Image 1 (cartoon, rainbow over the protein chains, first blue to last red):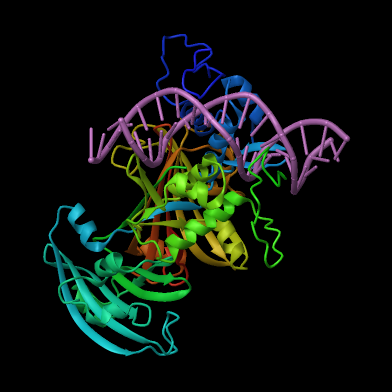
Image 2 (cartoon, rainbow over the protein chains, first blue to last red):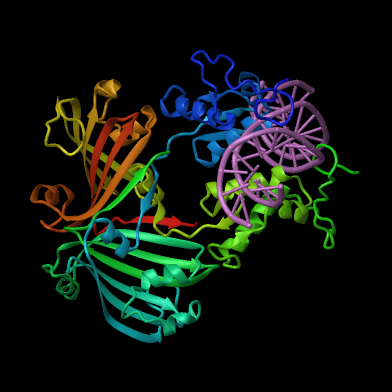
Length: 253
Length: 253
DNA sequence: TAGTGGTCTAGACCACACA
DNA sequence: GTGTGGTCTAGACCACTAC
């Protein structure tokens, strides 16, 4: 026995037939993972196809069941595979349904575009949220902020934000005249859940003026509610000029 | 030794002291996972905090290292934890930057809302894509489809789609008069990558007429390019009525 | 009822990063 | 060196479920 990698026996023959002189420097699990992913993503194993049983893969790769089990568990976590007891493991139906949407901090986004970020605080009020307002902040004391994000000196987005002072008391002392509230919150508040709503709306007269647009011009509205342990931390509505801002999501299963 | 769950020793006493008559029906790994997640999501362990070493968790839960290793690997896959050799494992910085955006099939989306789905094929042409067109289909033969999605009989979205006949030759024979191309493709074509672009635009005269809107009305534009192994499979632009359609993304780190 | 995945163990050797 | 995570093993018992 010449333990190639593992603790004792099994040798784990990295590749039963290393036809082209591959010393297989890659961990065996990763090689199995790459093999299975390749079969699935190339379409060789279409959705619904039953992948080999764990004991078959064990024999095929000459490894322990734990090894293939961990690999398949990873594929399940990645949404590529579904498992059913007694029946086997199957290639999952691809779900274009979900995509990873990058919603960067606006300052970071603008910097990434190579433009100069500008920020202006429009108003800052401390008040009690009313029942009719969108987030679940009824009756709570909130900080009500309005601000403008600029790229290369031109208005890009108008932001209206409520911060719960019950959830984030430190916000009362923060200097939002210099720091955008989004950036400040990202650094100061842990959160457990967020909901985004993306829609297209025509700018109101007031909004159009702030953004330098004509009334009714198409804008992208991004609303976000953030919770921590069931309590609403903040609600924000960002209104982007439709002519200069897109959201892009790149997704690989 | 009374092997409660594990193979041989360790006993793994599901709950060393079942003071309240809890038989701990939950697998130990899931309990550890829930404990660690709770600490992270509640903010008790803020971003950057070092979580206990594997050998510490082993001792704390009285289990094998493989068990805690698998748990932490899962947290890494979920983006909650980062690991550095020799240094330890750390709570990852939360990234609001990315959210899981559900982009369902339009028929499924409408059905989920409790409305009746309707579909109308507007045009179907077979032609050669020109160089100036958005996707990377220059010079390829494509199927050029235009169709309308309706909810409760009212127009909801206008769809323009190109399907590469090189990548999907079967599409030439598909009956898109009855089946929306998106649903057909989901069932027939594996894919490896997709890119979405979401923007707000004012409807053109032609688009406004198809959707029953006034010219210039704000619409949500969803563009999607889908690849398989580097080749563009399909490009689609769906134009939703801004007044009746939102995209919602719910996200937990 | 038989066979699948679900979970767990008590070790082991290795690579790597830091002191 | 020293200690961390990275990976792997050769078993084991259990729960569920399709047949």
